[in-house]
Image 1 (cartoon, rainbow, N blue to C red):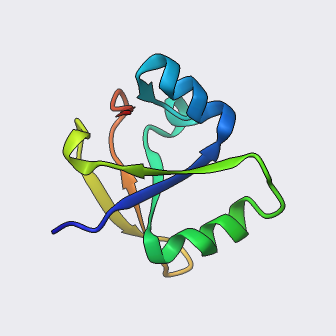
Image 2: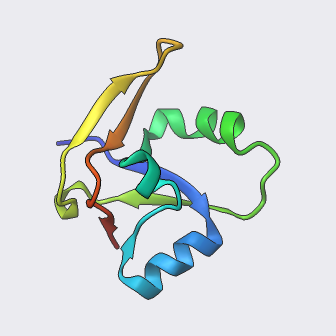
Length: 93
């Protein structure tokens, strides 16, 4: 079984995804991927990148619905993380 993936985003972006039927964060067109975390990484990522924000939601990504691969990478600081790959591959809801 593959470990579930999570993505932290704003309530506003999550609401847009519901309305559109797919999720594509603002930076997707620039970066070409979606930052994801495994369960054991979520708290650390939330504290580092979103400290103090109160408008956030946590999305669980169903890998079986992704039209692209998930790539596990290591950050410059030596910590592993995941991302969905390639431009033109937004996440379905």
